[in-house]
Length: 207
Image (cartoon, rainbow, N blue to C red; front, side, top):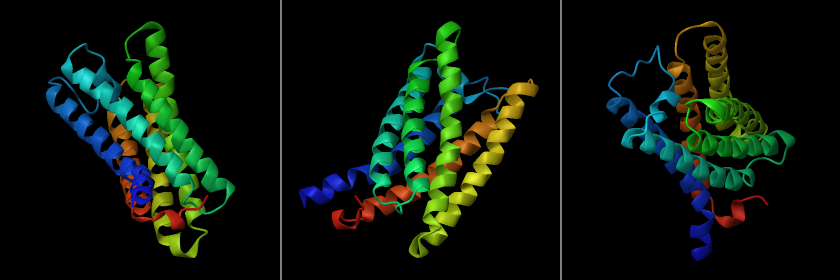
C-alpha cells in the first residue's frame, strides 16, 4: 500500500502543479489593477516587491518543482522510444527553467536577463515536450487518441509560441495572451497525463 501511494506522487504533482500556477496567475492578474492582456507580459506580475508579486514568483518555483517530479514519473510510463524519452527530459528541463524564472524577477540588469532567457526557454521546452510526448504516445494503439490530443495541443501552443516571438521582436504590444495560451494548453495536457499516471499501479509503470 505504501509503495502504491509513493508511486502515485508524480501523478499528483502533475495535477497540482498546473492547477496551482493557473490559480496563482489569475489571482495575481485580479490584484494587478493596471494589468492589460495586450500591453503586459505575465512576467510583469512578479516585478513589484509586494505580496502579489511574491505569491506569483513563489507559485512559479513550486509549480516548477512539482512538474520536475511529474516529468520523472511520466518518463517511465511513456512508450519506449527516443521521442518519449526526449519529451520527458524536455519537460523536466522546462520545469527547472520555470523555477529559475520565478527566482529571478523581470527587473533590470543580470536578473532581467536570467528571467528573460529562462522564461523563453520554459515556453520553448513546453512546446517541444508536448509534440514529442504526443507523437510517442500515438505509436501505442492504446494511447493513440490521448497522444493525438497532446500532439494537436502541442501544435496549438507552437502557433502561440510563434505569435509570442513575433510580438517580442516586432511589436510594441505585450505577450500575455500567447503566454497564457501556451500555459493553459500545456496545463490541460499535464493534468490529463497526471491523472493517467496517478491511476497506474507500480507494476504498470515501465522502468
